[in-house]
Length: 93
Image (cartoon, rainbow, N blue to C red; front, side, top):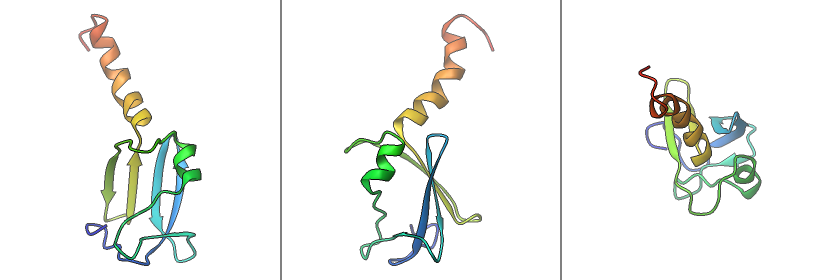
């Protein structure tokens, strides 16, 4: 939150896109940064990308775009499986 300059009360829009959660500031957003400076992902948002309680995620902040991307475990698996599959099958690429 600090890297993005998002403070408690900052209104946010959260969208699922290709298995990722894309979070941006939005003055009309339904979600917001908590008074403690945290971002809570409501159950419907977690369910749409297969997040389970206790799952670890990769966060990627882009301050120039005022954007946070949440990479759930399934998205990371997909990201890493394809490049490694060829190498494990004997391809040298």
